[in-house]
Amino acid sequence: MSQLFIIALCFSAFANAQQKTTEHLLLGSPYGEFCTMCEAFVVCLPQNEAANINPAEPPKVLPERGNFTLYYFPTRTFWQQIYTIWEWFIVNFMPVNSHGRPLGIYQPDGAMLSYQAAETFFSIDPPEITLPDAIIKRDDGSWLDKNRQPKGSCYRLPLWETLDVVAKRAPQTPN
Amino acid sequence: MNDLRGDFAWQWRWFGSHPLRGLGIILHLLLRILFGVFFIAAGINKINKGWLTTDVMEKIFYQRLTELHPDSFAAFFLQEFAIPLDMPLAWLITIGELIIGVGLIFGIAVRLNAWGAFAMMMGFAIGGYYDASLLPLIGMTILFFSKPTGHWLGFDRRLYPLQPWLFR
Picture (tube, chains in turn blue, orange):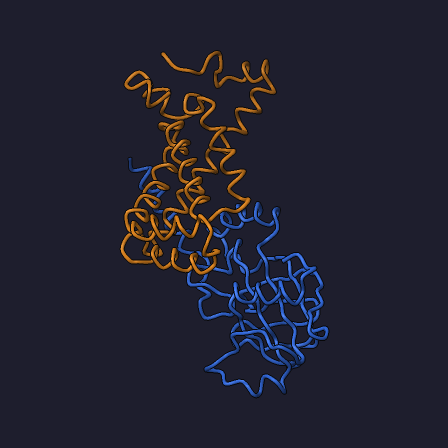
């Protein structure tokens, strides 16, 4: 019985090194990193358009027109989901601060949206989302170019409403 | 001793004459112990995060509800079953993970614990927490259920005469 107790204590010690809370970050959660099966849309607006936005009232709908980039973060791929077993295991011994997942990039093309598939990389430390063409800082939503120069600001959009909009404006894409 | 090991024995001679079966048994036991460690770590993590003492489970369910399609079965399951029973479920999952983990590591009622792990993961999947990582984990529980691994290594072998159904 005492062996059981010692083992439980050991596990308790290393289990304390669990995933950080990321509630304060863009696409963060009070229960850990942006989840494997979660999906999200983030719209990024250039500086001149983002300057007109009241931070207390971030956009809730995709702009009808204008210059923006809409990033779609779908669920992780099948093999990335399998890999989460290892991530959940190893997080008990050392922090797991990053993960990869697929990415969809939508850009305005007249009244419609063009689509491009890519890969992205989520990180808690540093708190960033690395995109093929840019970086999103997750602590303040700022949008940086590859040289880390400010490019604009990013905002999370409601999932289901944005899926409907994308289905209408980009009907040929996987969504 | 009356057990289900058949001709298996922890002897170099046995492994020498059954190399493939021996390797399978070693891998099987290794998986079982790792699975048990995984479950214990998950249970302790939940205790540390206040699952047994706060409404964190309810918050997790509500957060998941916002991510699920409103017409999906998982959303219905969360609203009608999981959220009203959040605290009993938090206890069931947390304590269940600890019991299953200990059982698998020490080879105590392995088959019953494997069944418990299987049921728990099927519940996660139905409740909107399905992802592909559940597939190998569910596969492992079926593996642990199918063989008397607690008789190869663990207390099942000693406990079997007391209650053959439980420790088989």
